[in-house]
Image 1 (cartoon, one colour):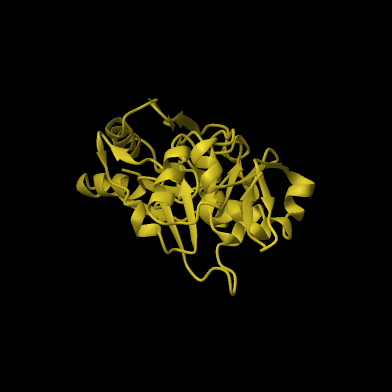
Image 2 (cartoon, rainbow, N blue to C red):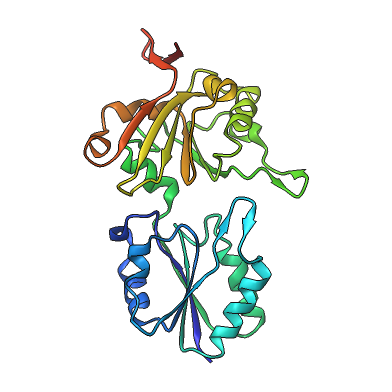
Length: 264
C-alpha cells in the first residue's frame, strides 16, 4: 500500500511551489490534479508518472467528489507515492480535509503539504495588501459559491465591519455579492478589485466599486480573486508588478477629492 500526499500547488506561478511539493512531484508515481494547476508544474513529474485529471469547473464536474475519493483509494493500493495536487492550498476551499477523512476511514496513509493560497498571493502580486496600518487591521476570506443546493449559507452581514474582504470563486455571483454587501451596510463607493489569472503572465486587474458592480458589473473571467476594501486604493501606488507583468483595467471609477472613490 502506498501513501497519498495532499499537496497545494499554489496560485499559478510555478516558482511559488514549495520545495516539499517540488520534491514530491519529482518522485510521484501518479498525480491526480485539478483544473487550475499550471501545466508547467505538471511538467516536473518523471516520465513514467501517471497524470490523472480530476478538475472541476463551475457547473461542470469532470468527476464527482465521491469518484475522486475512489480513485485515491484505487491508486494508493497500486502505487507507492500518490500526489493529490490542488490549486492554492488544499485546506482553503479545496476539499483537502474531506479527502483526508475518506482516506482515514479507509486506512490509507496520507500527509498534507500546504500551498501558497490565492487569497493573499494574488492580491499581493497586484499590489494590494490585505492589511495596512491606518487602513486595514482585519480581513476575511469567503467563498463566492453562495448556495449548497437551494440553501443559502453565506451570511454577508457578518462581513459588514471587516476592513478587507477577499472573495474566492465569486466571479459568477459578483453582482449579487455586491448587492448583498451594500444591503449589509458596506459603503457603496468602497473600491473593489478583480484580479484575473493572478501570479501568471496573463494577470489582469479591474478596479471598480460596490455600486458599479451591483448595477453594471465589469467583464471579469474566472479564475479571479475579488477584493473589497480601502486597501484596493494602494494598487495605484504598488502596481509595478502589473506594469511589467500584467494588465490593468478600470471600470467606471474615478478618485474623488476626499481620496475615496466615486462613479463617473
